[in-house]
Amino acid sequence: MAVSALIMAVLLASLDQTIVSTALPAIASDLGGFTSIAWISTSYLLASTAATPLWGKLGDMFGRTRLYLGAMALFLLASALCALARNMGELIATRALQGMGGGGMIVLTFALVGDVAAPQDRGRYQSLFGSAYGAAAIVGPMLGGVFTDQLSWRWAFLANLPVGLVALVIAARALPAGTRRATARIDYLGALLLAALATCLVLIISFGGHWGWSSPTTLGLAGTAATLVALFKPVEQRAAAPVLPLPMLRSRTVALASAVGFIANAAMFCVLVYLPTYLQVVHGVSATLSGVHMLPLVGGLVLSQSLAGRWAGRGGAWQTCLIAGMALNALGLLLLTTMVPQTGTVTLGLYFFVLGVGIGMVPMVVMTAVQNSVDPADLGAASAVVTFARSIGAAFGVTAFGTLLNNGFTERLSTVTGGLHLPGGFNPGRTEAVAALPDLVRVPVLAAFSAAMTSAFLLTVPLVTVGLVLTFFLKEGTGRRTRARSSTCATQAR
Image 1: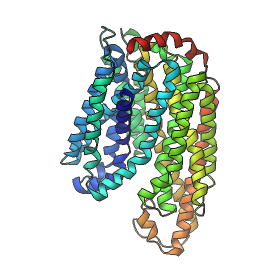
Image 2 (image 1 turned 60 degrees about the vertical axis):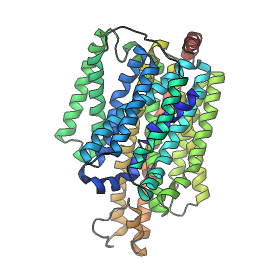
Image 3 (image 1 turned 30 degrees about the vertical axis):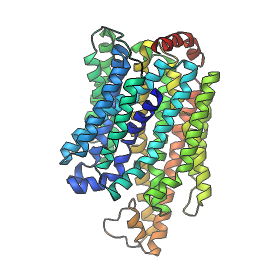
Image 4 (image 1 turned 120 degrees about the vertical axis):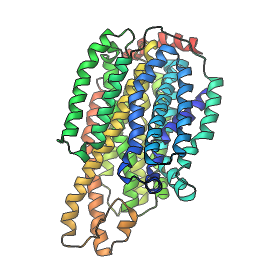
């Protein structure tokens, strides 16, 4: 029962990062403020990323169950407020509040598994959450489209309430009560510096291309981020209960696993965000059918999550899982570089399945490896580090891939169309705009878009290769040394 409540919570928090994307045009049309539309998603990402380390540390200090229930209640309240928003400003503000609750739900869910499960069982449970996380990235846009077309965009938020309330009741009854673990003063200054640093990084990644990478705004944020990093170390050294313990950050396993998580999430969100766009534009399928075409990827992801969790937990071979996962990630991306408009559905399904298997073998194994390498008292902070790295990686991957895609398409479009006339305001990302083009123009436009997309996937391969190399330097023994100690903690938590 406890695990089912945790899975529902992860699914809700993950869906809210993707379900709104399909509804954005309808929201902007209803509330106005097209110029602020990007902030509907960015405010959620900013708040969830910035609050993650604080949620993790507070869970270590005061007991994770109480904090988890509070984060879920905050998320549900904010969901209701989002649905009632009367203008764009209110929606952006309530989305930020929702992001704070969603970030807490995710990081505390992963940490609670460290409380109630022994190290050899953590991989199996984490794989369930990873499957929900990956499936949400595919199902979210489909649900957003259904709600927007058949009901209203407000149902993208209202739908959270019945499921979330059920999960809240089950969690309150089934999760261990938890105890207050520390009486030290909360590291408010460290949490503030870390939240400000996260804000700067997300803003640079999300809007640096729009503002210009050498613009005063981008350079100012970069300088601020560098200053915050310099201030963070002495502040944490003096704190009685630092929000991120520095000895933990110096751990090879924590540092390398977080880097691998960053890279894996960057690649994963490139695929999950842009492959449906490829299917809709190049193959002309609807938003709903593009989700159906992505089912082989989801199937591979769910299968590999389950197998990797059991394999790593039974034999402690999480390093082998990570190596295999990153290698399959690279192979899957290379397969995507061979896509052309004439590629058949069966072939695409095979490519997607291979990539899904690779994607599924990495994220939760990274979390398990880090949790098994730290002291049980730091499980929340360690889970927050990995979650923070993955969140920044997702933002970086989507933004960088979008830049590569747009630049590559612009260059190819001017070459292949030559003197052909394109309608004013033509947007290749809108399926109906491409479908409306005459055959003489549409064929070279589709070829240019397909080539730009595959080239962007090719440029992602070196990043994944770096992640693959890093996995060879991870040490399995660290997790094994803490198994007995963590098993005792898990028994006490039960």
